[in-house]
Length: 113
Image 1 (cartoon, rainbow, N blue to C red):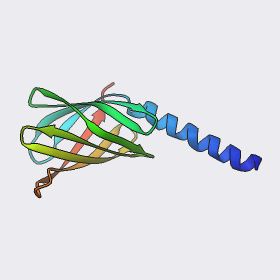
Image 2 (cartoon, rainbow, N blue to C red; image 1 turned 135 degrees about the vertical axis):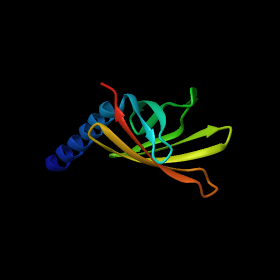
Image 3 (spheres, one colour; image 1 turned 180 degrees about the vertical axis):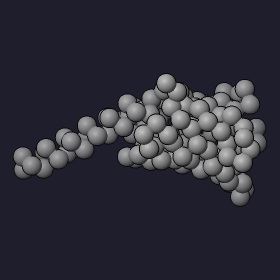
Image 4 (cartoon, one colour; image 1 turned 60 degrees about the vertical axis):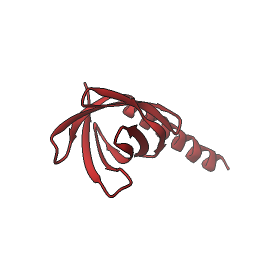
């Protein structure tokens, strides 16, 4: 039983370490469009909040979730709702987006220093 408690404790600490890594500003480009994009992320447990800036317009992210190194959230723009899914690897996040009508793409962002 002590071993089980230790394993659970380590897993919980790993989750908190991930949360600390994603907090902050991230910037990069929308692949294929060469359009700059920025995110500000804040992790609270398995909940991800923050904002998305593209074309000078800042929009709150919604339905943000964290599962290990995987993140997901949505952003609602004038063009519609965009679902994002990404994987954190060090100081980089590779994500895909889908606008629900078949329009998909990739975004790569790096953490600001």
